[in-house]
Amino acid sequence: MECYYSFKNDFNKIFDFDNNLYIKISCGNEKVYNKIISSACPVAIHIRAGDLLKDLKKLDKKYFLKSIEIINKKLYPQKPTFFIFSNDMNYVKKNVINSKFKFYDIEFVEENDNDKGFIDWYLMFKCRHIISTVGRFAITVYAFIDYNDKILITPHNINSFDN
Image (cartoon, rainbow, N blue to C red):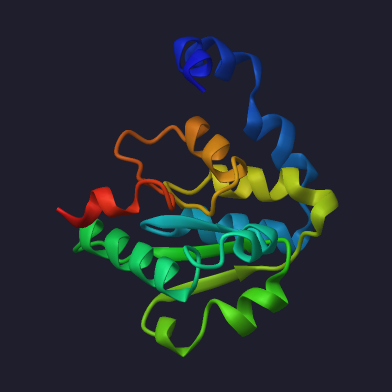
């Protein structure tokens, strides 16, 4: 990622994500896109079920609840909208996001399967902040977000927000 940051401006001129990816989104994804861009403070949460199963001790409901609480605290008085992206939304709804999350504005992005990961990437790219599992997918999205005060929360850095 360090190499990307060195050439960020050049790279972003070559890869115009809005012109190249927006045209590929479906009607359902366009609704999500419009919610994201109209949200005062959109936050993407990327939950890969495989990452949860491998790192179950770290990545339980508590991790995501703590991450959401950190975002809320850091962005107050703004009220974030959390857009959840996953390769197994049924698992997420049954095992991760439950009634403890009812006080938060949460949108489940269910339009895409694994073969449409690039659309999830693009929709996440339109958010300002990222909450990630241990994979690199969301971290890569974060690198491309063009928002100065963006926040990335991962299992590796979550404790650094305790101060």
